[in-house]
Amino acid sequence: MMLEFAKLQDFYSIFPQTVAIIGAARNLMPAAWHTPLSADPPLYGVSVSPKRYTYDLLARESGFTVNFLMHEEAGLIAKLGNTSGREIDKLERFGLAAERAGKVNGMILQACYGAFECEKFAVHECGDHFLVVGQILAIHVTREVLSEHEVIDLRKVRPALYFSKDRYLTIDPATLAVHKK
Ligand SMILES: Cc1cc2nc3c(=O)[nH]c(=O)nc-3n(C[C@H](O)[C@H](O)[C@H](O)COP(=O)(O)O)c2cc1C
Image: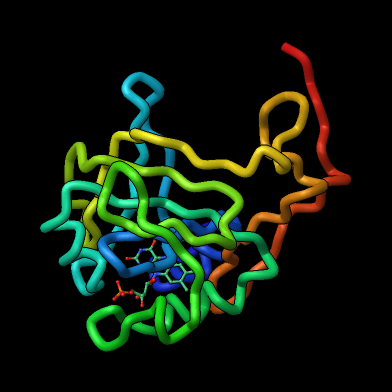
């Protein structure tokens, strides 16, 4: 089946994506377009439209944070994504508990189950977005949410995934399958 270009928005709904909350200075913005890019050095990329206040902040700051929230925080994610730090202080407006990251000028949300601190490594123009690449300087994770394999235990963490058009879902841990190499 071939989709018309006009159906591009629908194409994005084919696969749900984990939501990352990008923290720059005091501001926080959800992003569904983000990805690991390199293991050595450890690089992480976030795709940010120049329309976002976060873009202006990332242009002037030397680093940022990437926070991961659970599905039960989907309402908060929607609020952070429907408001701009240009107009309001989101931390204050939504009464968020957060602390400043240790190595970069960005916030770490108390509600997150994991977070990265990234130093700006490169910025690439990518169509109508900019791929902001950060080198991960620190990883924060709550020990209790790790499994014995040192990966996130999906029985304890239900990550927030975005499924376009204001829809959110999570992962069903019952579907976990292991296929050895
Ligand atoms: C779930 C979700 C995912 C989003 N993903 C992105 C994204 O990947 N890149 C982007 O530039 N904007 C994305 N947005 C839009 C911004 O989060 C939104 O415009 C936000 O209000 C920008 O805040 P700011 O002006 O304080 O930076 C997303 C919004 C939501 C709700």
